Image (cartoon, rainbow, N blue to C red; front, side, top):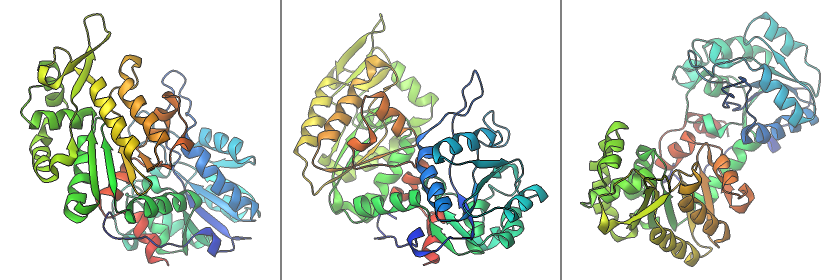
Length: 415
């Protein structure tokens, strides 16, 4: 969608939900405490609770759909704990129904009173939920075909799953009037404003998923090269660009790239480097763990590095900060991934200093990634320090890469 202009969609302001049975697809997927098995509260719960409470306050009969984990994985559980956490945030009971499409679920939907809400069980307990199909095909899947006759409207509130063509995301949209929930509305409005309509973009790309960053850069080079003002790299991507420019990173880092198959993207990175040119910056220096575990730094000219690279170095940090400080209000900065292994205090410096500079910047700042809120809080910052912090990980990358997003497409079709 990077080159497709503004996205238009219907919101809750355009429908009266009073007395209606409202299906709401949210994303409550979370990590489980490995010791206790307890579901961990995250920002998605807080965000979706506002949509649910609004629908309840307006007299809707609210039916919430969500998933947790995947079949066969350790975090694949029922949603009973999710209902408790939601109830605490909504300030009203969101009753858990240990059923998805059976008689218990249907009866619970039929018996809802105005202003009440239920959370049905994990939709991924259905075999045909997470099969990729078109909305028309999924209209015949178990969940939509069974429950749509007992529902009045569908609200898609989860941008973070909008890149999936799953039954509970697109199937109901083929059968019911469909609207964007408040979380979806905020995400799309922010992306319209900060990305689709912005003519001057700076990328700050790091983390340990170079494929996602490569996809984004390839799309922008192809469709919007004139909007790319600068690309600042760190993390694995910064290492790959450094290697593409002829430097040897050192055996520990080279072995890591091979083990994680990041080295497979070296050719694509090299091609990107040729196309972007001088506006693409790779790190000038790197940080690694010394023999005592402490932070050590090495200049790019001093490579190879004797230890595994875990952060950008001080000279790179300073240069990136100076670039950010010079940016004006006409620029949007898109951040994907940390500069280093920020979970370790000694290698937090790169991410923390860059994020602190962004928090003070006059530019608009879009921070993306599923764990971005966790990282921001760990660094002593707040989401409100930035223009927008997206709750989408893979979905945000799909959006920036211009990939088809089934959940957004069904909203656009329902205008």
